[in-house]
Image (tube, rainbow, N blue to C red; front, side):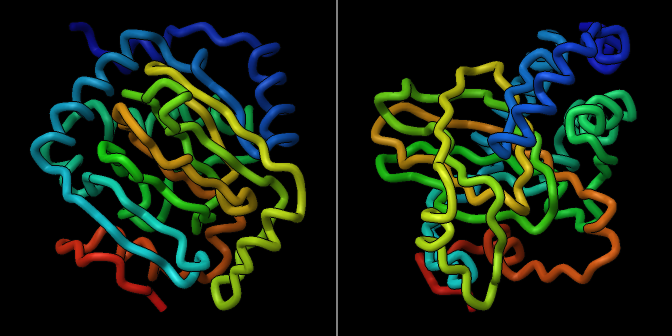
Length: 249
């Protein structure tokens, strides 16, 4: 296979597509961006993700007080394991071409995350009840690549409430859910979406069948570099061991 990053550099994306995605991101807190990378690159990323999640994935079953004790039940592969065993994913993450396209959609600079564990992580929902419960992220943006996904009847779709804020000391998830409309979106393998994750409360609906495998690439806004950010939920979520359902305070 040719260099997948070379195909990204020559991939054509129209200004109309970018403008429409920018409007969706501003309105809904997320925008599908399946057009933004070529099929060759999607296949290369999917190949590495599937190879990694089977061998390096760790099961998690956790709750976090900072997000109202919402549940995280999944298998994941941390950034360090991805770096150790892959080549395409790290190169794609830091691609100047991709960053420029994401910045066009966001309407501001989209930057590599300064906190390395949040740069990219693979997650898989594989058992009945697996979910990535309601939460916000520490940094502004997430680009999610859908590698596998159940039929919508079996869950695994995304729900979000844009224009909400995260108070780690008093998250008030239910009040945030009432603060505005909740949008839901289904995806198929090969889809990508960009989400404004620091001001969009979001979750993955619990699955009842099938498998949902993704790689999440986290990015920062310029304002993220100017403020102090704690990482207690991420540090617990990606710890070496995975105790069952403690509350993280």
